[in-house]
Length: 188
Image 1 (cartoon, rainbow, N blue to C red):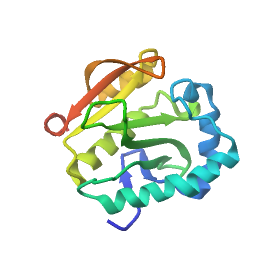
Image 2 (cartoon, helix red, strand yellow; image 1 turned 30 degrees about the vertical axis):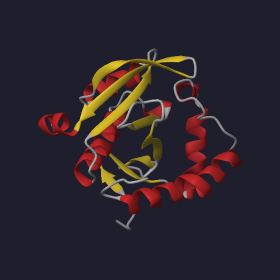
Image 3 (cartoon, helix red, strand yellow; image 1 turned 90 degrees about the vertical axis):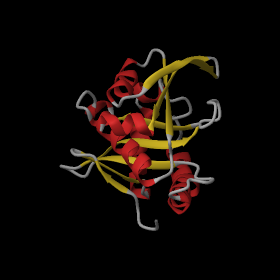
């Protein structure tokens, strides 16, 4: 697959990061509601630009070229775009979580505080799940959420993830969730 990944999720679209997303991404990652639940999300604008150019955009190309097998796929980083306005309002990604037992591909997401409680995170997560289960060989998808992150936990439950346990990562307690392709298919 060589063309940019775009996933229509209803009111929002998921699409690969672009350099012009950096200012909005930077602003979102400065919001306490985001960095409180995503360790390492804070960065300077310059760091964010470097990461986008040197890591995130190349990672997306590598992910695309690894499809459908996902061998050495790494990360896929997608912006959540409000369809009505074209505004970048959050992000949704998938990557390997080393702290999880194999198969250890996970999904993650964050949305600007100005667009919360509208169902956009759930739409984005479901869209990425559908893409991964339909377009790749992926059979199992994981998610972790800080035990205090009730919003993320609700999103995962709405998406059909099942609680698989609790774990500690870098001194913080997380709930571990899992969904299998066969379970996703029977609920979609």
